[in-house]
Length: 323
Image 1 (tube, rainbow, N blue to C red):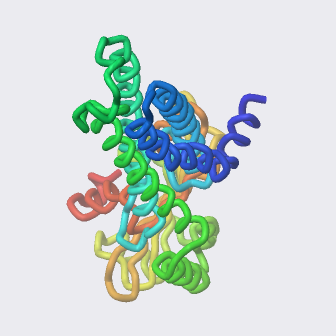
Image 2: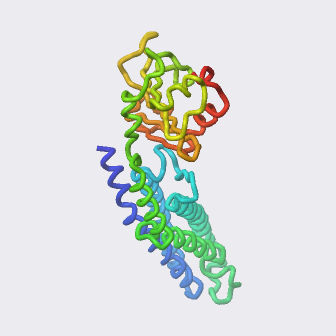
Image 3: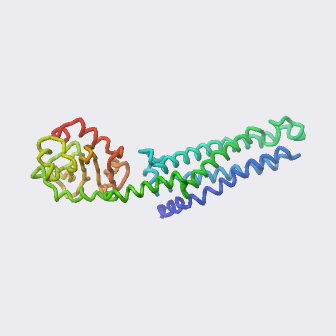
């Protein structure tokens, strides 16, 4: 039940943001009337009421936006900001700015609310009976400081709203990025599943039986290599271009290979000589999810930063050390 409520809050984020944004737009106008009114107190109260509703609405929008970002996988589970691994991730970069602008707006809004509260308390002072138009400009109405903060609040949330609109409806930059990502996915037959790695049993086994590997979670492993690269692999040479090796794993069960399968690891030598890595764990046990950053199903491929440790290890250590 709690999950469905949170899902509803997340998906309604685009609706929630319009309420505080409207309030933030109205706030400077209410404040402006307090500068001209003969009796500014009612306009101060109105400004404080609008600012309070706007601040509460901003918090709801902030929380719902975070939940929505996680729901659509732009923000990692348990995270607060999207991870930008490359300059091509236009949406992630835009979401970072969107979140920063929203947070800045919340802080400014809180300060604005505090200043308005102080202005209301000062109305108890004897100066409250002095005609407003005879006071210095800084002493009129709500005062210059709250007015300035209300304009800064409007600027930050206006910028935040503009970025949100671009992320939903797109612009030239996001449309180009989406088209490029779609084309890359069409050209990549393994964009969704590690097809060849799953078919590791069709490759040549390096060992007759599984062996223990400390470097791979202290699991039982077995290495499989394409036929054209098996000789080079056994000789400790780099794999020829177009060949790859798959490491299948099984969890340990009292010093023996258990029935539960672990992740698959894949190392491939591309046509240009570069080495590519892949990691596939279709069902991560709850107790092991700290190893995947909380993901319950993981599929990582080069150039993912999550595979950096694989690249470093294979670049600096020999086969015996890596096992």
